[in-house]
Image (tube, rainbow, N blue to C red; front, top):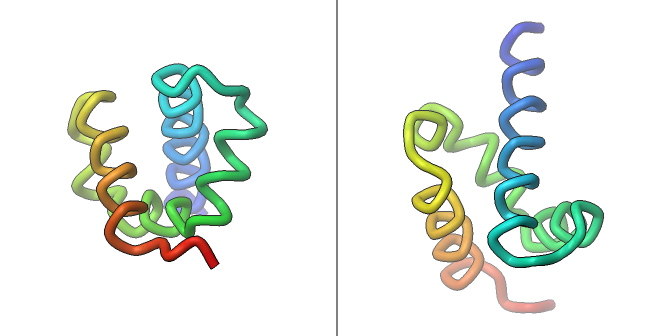
Amino acid sequence: MNNVKNDVKFLAFCVEIYKSKKGISGKNAYNYLQCTDATDFIIDCYGALHTTGSLYIVDSIDDFIANNYSGN
């Protein structure tokens, strides 16, 4: 249960920093990250990402989307 709680908190944190860096609403940020499977990436990479800074996290998310999302 504790891991799920940490995952949700970290995902919320990532949505917040992503929306701020991109100048979009939290709802739009979450929807975009969800439809590009970036939410799964964030949870799967929690161990590596949670120790980094916000700019690195946003860059990592953008890199993941660029390399893995075909827009379908």
